[in-house]
Length: 69
Image (tube, rainbow, N blue to C red):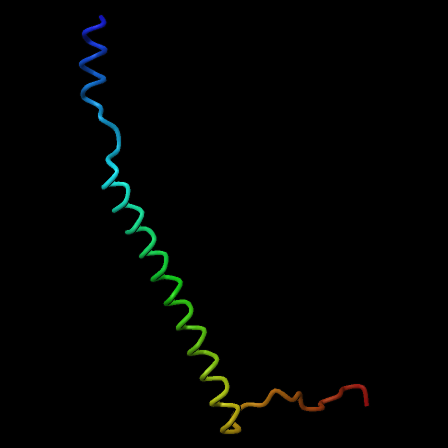
């Protein structure tokens, strides 16, 4: 029975350091890419908003449409 344990233990070497580094880099780059795409989207939306505001197509001032008069 001790020999079977040694054989089973020898078959499992555990995770490799290089493999874990590659997994970490891959996950980090994927998450960073998603964050950067989100950042570009927010920048694009802000630029579009200020461009429309400058053209006068939109306004941030609420028109006075009071129903209580």
